[in-house]
Image (cartoon, rainbow, N blue to C red):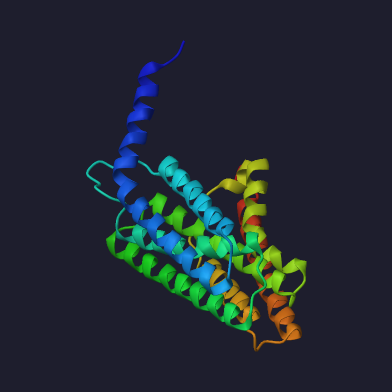
Length: 251
């Protein structure tokens, strides 16, 4: 028997999410497309790039609407999530570069470094705002997924630069490989305790990838620092997996 009341409730929840996040998502789309236009000028890209970035944003907006819980009394996404949305307006156009794979000049690499650095600074800003105003499960997840996407994008750009081998993409891919492993083994999907070690290593990955992109950094040095960063990241994941699979946890 079809539960029409549940379908009605789901529909009302979706409509509430659209009313809640719609204006902010529309502003985010405008910011994202503006950044994409700027990248088109910097990298001399085709219209296909612009459409690709727009498509990425539509996918992200859909995921936001599906994931956003309806909070009584909330009238918008909130300041912290707006900052995260602003970061997305920088990260998604960078993601589009990995698909278009343009020939990036020296100035182009400095531009990528500048944009990614601003996105990382905003990561600290939205975290500070969230702590001041009260963090939410949705906000933390939104922030984490955008962090993961930025690392994946930067690792792909580093590989495409030719300075570091294909293995550097593991820096960005490990988060997603862990997600797949969590799906295959549910015990790995348990919530991890807050960890300064985990946060620090995540920041290190981003900084190292930006260093690797620096035109003044030779390929040998880029490979060395990337390898050290990857080793740190792998050790962090191993520590988390061991904690999740520890005896007596009921895995």
